[in-house]
Amino acid sequence: MTASGTPVTSASDMAEPADTVRVPVALGERSYDILIGRGVLGEAGALIARRIPGCRAAIVTDSTVGRHHLETLESSLAEAGIDCSAIVVSPGEGSKNFATFEQVVDAVIAGRFERGDAIVALGGGVVGDLAGFVAGVVRRGMHFVQIPTSLLAQVDSSVGGKTGINVSHGKNLVGVFHQPDLVLADTGVLDTLSERHFRAGYAEVVKYGLINDADFFVWLEENWRDVFAGGPARTHAIATSCRSKAAIVARDERESGERALLNLGHTFGHALEAATGYGDRLVHGEAISIGMVLAHDFSVRMNLASKDDADRVRAHFAGVGLPTTLAEIPGDLPDADGLMTLISQDKKVSRGSLTFILTHGIGKAFIAKDVVPDAVRDFLAEAKAAGART
Ligand SMILES: NC(=O)c1ccc[n+]([C@@H]2O[C@H](COP(=O)([O-])OP(=O)(O)OC[C@H]3O[C@@H](n4cnc5c(N)ncnc54)[C@H](O)[C@@H]3O)[C@@H](O)[C@H]2O)c1
Ligand SMILES: O=C(O)C(=O)C[C@@H](O)[C@H](O)[C@H](O)COP(=O)(O)O
Ligand SMILES: [Zn+2]
Image (cartoon, rainbow, N blue to C red):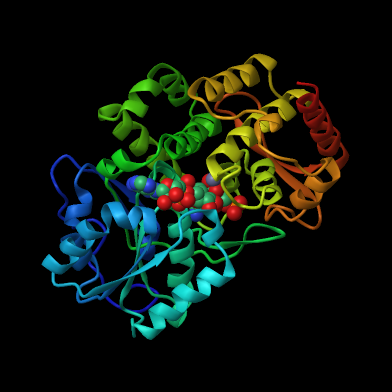
């Protein structure tokens, strides 16, 4: 049974296309599978029909993704006898806002989609977070299927049930935990993704190596060109990332502890996204590339990690073409105090104290509570001044 009370096919008895990698997310009655492989999108109808028998589907997508991939999904749903309609939003982070949320909610309710029907997110992390929030609250919770189409969404945002929107005070400050019933990651759809967004998503792949898997980081240092080129290395990177996230989420679904490790680089990164207005100036993956470099540099500053490790992290991100410094962000940034105001809204703040994900070195991230704000502010002031000098 699901939260909505509709019986669904269990996560483990689904037929997937050949050559598909299946990664289970073990969450008791909320367990589900992530299916990773080329061509999975074309099987979406049959897979969804098995998992949520008799459902209708409200597809949420953005206009760019819709142009490339909506027809394939609609045909697949039609073949499986699933009645559907599509709700198309504007591409980009700007759509994770109250106005777009309201539009999607309204369309779902006007379309008479019921609690036992499914919201199907076809898109990157923006569509997934927005559509998941809608699924979590309309009729107090509908079925939810993630069809992630960006690298970032395939390795991170489609897994684990964090959904939400941004407000001017900060990123993802309004939302709910709402797990999907199924995640379908078609590696073929990445062929239409821009290089900029592929690179941004790659930052979240590297994150898994930096958190707790130094061997994976080394593998990425050696094989990142093959990951960018596509083929088996890319599938390996996606599956490894999903396994890593699934394991953490299974142990700590609602971030009462260990899950906060997945926030490596995000305390700095989210503040930078808010400071730059949630737009094209700086997309999420780029913000957390800079954020992860800052988290390593700050750890060195606190005598927790070696400068060699921090330099290696910077070199890898820079090598693939990701930004690593504040100076690379186009336009003006707030001063260190302004950035601290944004950081103070971080969801990891507890009883007014800052929590950061810091590190003892590559693959050795840890949760640091009660981080001294003055130390962070001085560090940011220096990072900004270094940018101003270059
Ligand atoms: N919920 C979570 O656990 C979680 C995890 C990580 C990130 N996020 C969120 O994810 C968002 C970033 O996701 P994103 O990087 O996917 O951004 P995005 O959804 O904006 O997608 C990036 C761009 O690529 C386009 N695109 C996506 N797939 C495409 C495809 N196959 N072909 C052509 N174009 C395609 C989109 O239209 C968009 O312009 C942020 O809001 C971030 O906060 C959430
Ligand atoms: O799934 C998680 O947990 C993460 O922290 C993954 C992050 O990559 C992602 O950006 C997430 O949306 C950030 O969560 P938040 O709770 O800091 O908003
Ligand atoms: Zn992230």
